[in-house]
Length: 113
Image 1 (cartoon, rainbow, N blue to C red):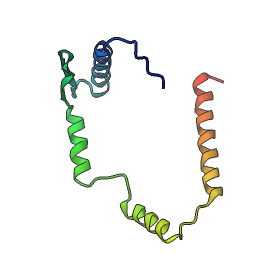
Image 2: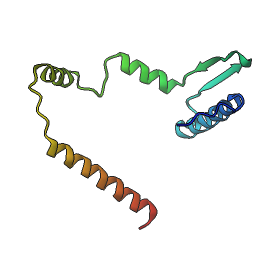
Image 3: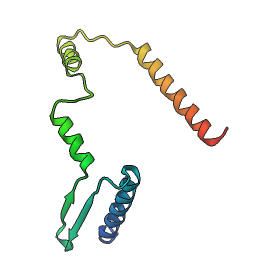
Image 4: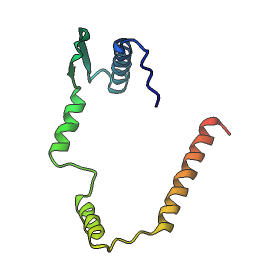
């Protein structure tokens, strides 16, 4: 990524991004969630209020509701430490190919070919 040091303050870009985020959230939540941010001058201070959905997701995460199987992760860590982890490169290759096929199929369906 190239960073252009000659650009002026990104405050307007941030405001535009915030407006698009708010419009997108209102469309996806039916207006139930809100996200607001206000910038105060050039100091860079900001005030952010998260939506109700965000608060709900945070409470689920802190309650231990997780998509990660921590027991499986620990068993993999142990196998790595012990040097007993076996990697099936054929299975990995099959997964990569299946993903590529799915992506190509979705791309061809969306382009109408």
